[in-house]
Image (cartoon, rainbow, N blue to C red):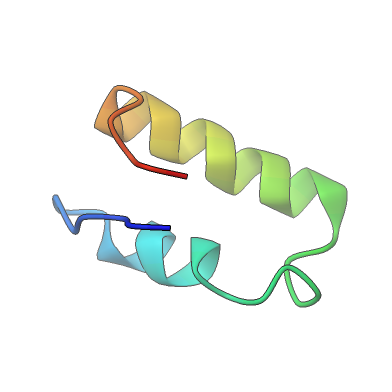
Length: 45
């Protein structure tokens, strides 16, 4: 997975955590949604 830091480095770092730590579904969904919203879907997930 490649996430470019376009000004949302905090989200990028949290998304890059092992899924076991971000396994709380709502949190993962929020991170994913925010990333897509901010990056316009250009992040390679």
